Amino acid sequence: GLGDVYKRQRLERLKKEDSMENREKFSSRLGFILISAGCAIGLGNVYRFPITTGAYGGAFFVLIYIAFLVLLGIPVMTAELAVGRASQRSIASSYDVLEKKGQKWHLAKYLGIAGNYLLMMFYTTISGWMLIYFIKYADGSILAYKSAEELGAVFGTMISNPVLMVCATFAVILVCFSICSFGLQKGVERITKWMMVALLLLMVGLAIYSCTLSNAAEGLKFYLVPSLKSLENSGVWTVISSAMGQAFFTLSIGIGSIAIFGSYIGKERRLLGEAVTIVGLDTFVALMSGVIIFPACFTYNGGVTADAGTVGASFLFTTLSSIFNSMPGGRIVGALFFVFMIFAAFSTVIAVFENIMSFWLELTKLSRRKVALINIALMLVLSLPCVLGFNVLEKIQIAGKGIMDIEDFLVSNVLLPLGSLVYVLFCSRKYGWGWKNYIGEVNCGEKGAKMPGWIRPYFTYVLPIIVIIVFIMSVVG
Image (cartoon, rainbow, N blue to C red; front, top):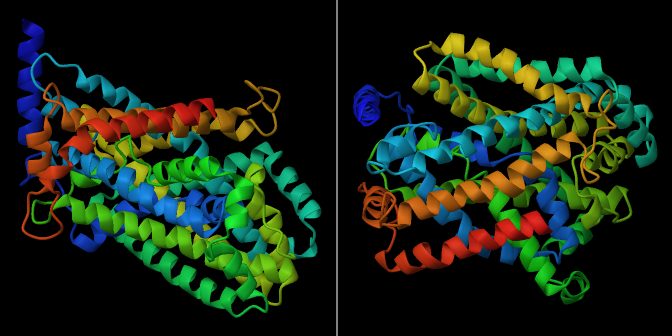
């Protein structure tokens, strides 16, 4: 029919417009690695991973977490990268390009588009908090408050101010979309590379400083030395399920935020090696965050960190801020820490905004500048429910969850696992893109690790079951 003819013509146009020769590329492999890792490295790495590690068995949790990164995170990431590179498209049209005639895989685009927008609806708000706290440490106004209780009141006053929250969120949206408006190489790659290098240097510097504190050895022992008692107290299954969930959600896989960067790279290197490098960098940042936090907790907070029930962004603004305010040079350390947090947050925001930009560029004929202007306005409006959920709309709750928690739940517990499941099935089933196409794309190139053929049964049958288990656990739990 006419619909099929139109679709074929459109796909031919898409393939021609974004062929390997015409599509904008990263200027270097380093740019691809740092930006892709920046997308995966986020606020959850910095505050949630080390605290969850401490709450769920210490080093045993870390070992199980790394095992699940290998078993779950890396294979799904290769699927995203392969679909992106083969299609030369974002999730908005990658399935359209690769699926066979009459198939409906392209409907998954709506999960991906929704996931990216929904993620930014609350992530930009939290990023705004980091910006405000950097200013508080830079001007020293926060130093007058010493206890976690006092700082909790300061944090509560901040988020209950709708004007301040809207301004901070808008600043994040404006800066990050403006960077994306300059293009992949001149904007996203240039800025993110410097931010990621600065992030890594700040992190190493803060970690070295933490290791010089008086009770650093006790903090590192708590964090890194296996403790059977801690494992027994937490429960083996609880530790396993928590490590599985953390390994899955830390990489932001499933909504196409990694696939877009696959579409910007050439065929010189195999994708398994690239995925391992990205995951390795993400894990390094997560582990180093604990090296920063635990020595400080044991030196200035009597070893009190947080339990599994209190893991959240507010930990940074209460317990951790009270530690900074109690140590010599805490103003400088606190300011540097929140610069570190801003870079971690902005690297993710810029990466996801670039994905959102690509949706519009593929589906419309608008320029980057116009797409950026439209989305600055759109994103500000979409972020308002979360921003106002702590003040004007604070009474709106569903099952005891506020607006931010609802948005976070939908992305982390529903859209990420469902999107990952679609990627795995699409790449492994003959009624999808198929294993031969997937393995051919992953192993295309002369450099890097090769995906072994014997992994096919695991990828086809076991991996989908693991993702389904993660999904059920995250929704029910």
